[in-house]
Length: 403
Ligand SMILES: [Zn+2]
Figure (cartoon, rainbow, N blue to C red):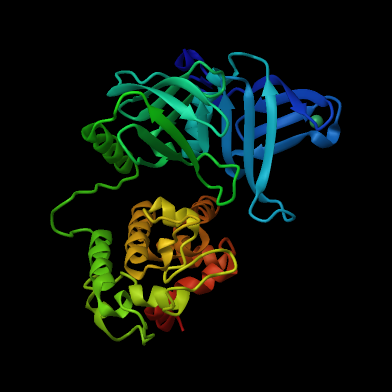
């Protein structure tokens, strides 16, 4: 159905604008207007409230969601100064039942993973299908969860709760037992640390080890990460992983009473790959080797992981336990994070920039700057000042070279 809607006029390469009647809800009352998708971006033109009109280019769209219920959300990169960390969000309601089906193919092409498909496209030949309940805070919805070659689909009878996630929309999956599955997506969560959103499912049939592993591998593969359990460390991030694992077991941080020392000496220098940052140097810059270090922003431990990142890479962080203060465990999590970032950026300067500023911030800088050169991005002011100083501080050799 959605493939039949020709937005691109053959030959001409011109994208026709699509407009929909949309409603903007206020605290009291609402206004109506026209929601338009054109070649440059998305705009809303209010018929009655001029100041509620807006226009956002696709480059400035951090996330767009079009649900089959007609709900439309657009999140921009423009930070609201009065609410740190929160971005500007526009919410509209579209009555046209074909809305999601019509705009989805166009948004998919333009926004890659920044578009969150609310539309349910049944996987062509599902690898598996499991009846499931999507757990929400107060109640859940009933539906069927299925995995396909490139996507996971949750089909619910409740309008607006069905979802299609392409593997590239999924950050990772996790589970605590065979009857539970959590899908962590790039859809923005309402809570703090809001770059990802968890969808928790209670499964009515168990997911087998094989089904779970297969899905996990496919998701990793969609990010360019080919994880093999065994085999020689031929790629740099696996080598870093192993080096860091080894380092984590060493008395340096495995024992209490960590001693700060010059990063240019000691066991970590046995790293064989020239461009790999010295993990001791990262720790020195992050925490001064203090495993209990805590930042005003809530980052903690040797590696100064945020709760969100720590959980994402396997640490327990809750009211009872905070494994970020465990040197060996947090080193393992940080290693996985660095490996993941290396899979994403393929360049250690960008990896470190992302470790400091967050990957979405760096991805956005690359997108806006049209270059993957860290120094070029820095020079043009596309990265935060702190990050511009952080990367050379960790890569001391680079600093010396540049001076
Ligand atoms: Zn309005």
